[in-house]
Length: 99
Image (tube, rainbow, N blue to C red; front, top):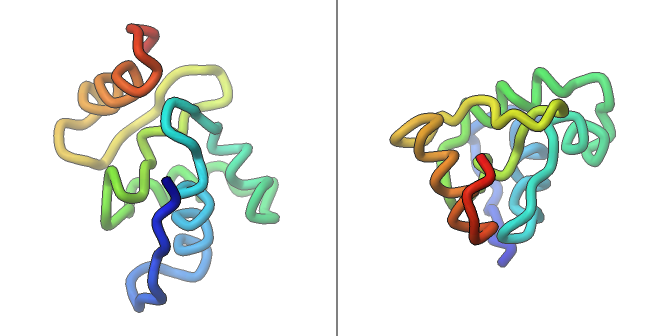
């Protein structure tokens, strides 16, 4: 399900672009920070995408847990529960323990 984000004063335009793109990732799927950077037209900004995820004001609604590193490792998670929660969410969504 894609949630519509209303225009808000929270976050930079770049962060808002990242968050909007992340809401398009389907349940059970993942994208890399690099893929998100390319999708928003900033292919050299994967680190900035990771920083935008860290500033995510609405974990779960903006599912930053679905964004992983290019090497397949899960990266960080700013939501409650940290990396362990990210692993739980990813494994729940795919239906088996992978992360």
